[in-house]
Image (cartoon, rainbow, N blue to C red; front, side):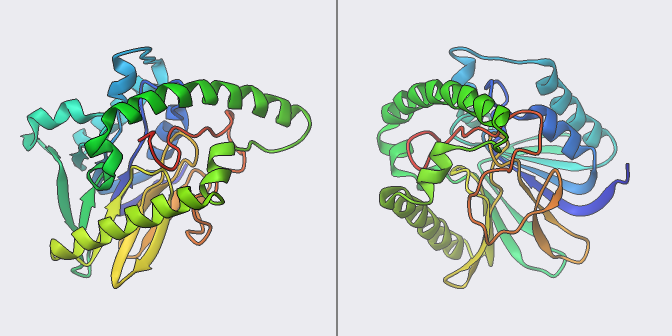
Length: 274
């Protein structure tokens, strides 16, 4: 297996500890890259599940070991706090050897562009002002994920690819589309205030690379449904990538086509599920 060296690798919303986290796919994916810098852009560990039905299997441990191995071989790791791993915010900012923990970072590309790296939950009014709605929605959505898993088992037997109801609604229901657009607008505005040319974020589980109001907007996606990440290549080009290679960022928020061993599931819908 060939290993690709890149300047930076950005990953968010893995939700380790959630039964729907695609940790095996992430472990294999990380083994294909040798980044100078690895940015973990929030919600890597699902602290909400830690308080309830936390599931930490071997593949989750394999992901942690893979990251530690990258640290050992010289990769600098930057951990950005999110709302599902907000318990880490009490320790931020902090440096552990070659690993740094903070609520946000600024990454400078090879061609000098300053990119704000932030999870994005601070731009979600429900996270800030109605956290109980998020927690209630998280419980309901977990039940929906179990239903969706069985539905996709049936679809596979009939020869159809995996499908996510929430992802379909996210791109079709007006309120969901408005939520995404509002989120992106808030992120772009804050990025400009920080004096940055672009932003890398997560939170809404909608992978994207777009130019918005003069700001380069990048969303990593997630490792629950879409299995996507962002890379900065050695020449400074930023691309959206997945287990099978580069992903077309023009297809905003479409789920994986079922290439992997488990059906793609949605951890976060368009609003109150983080």
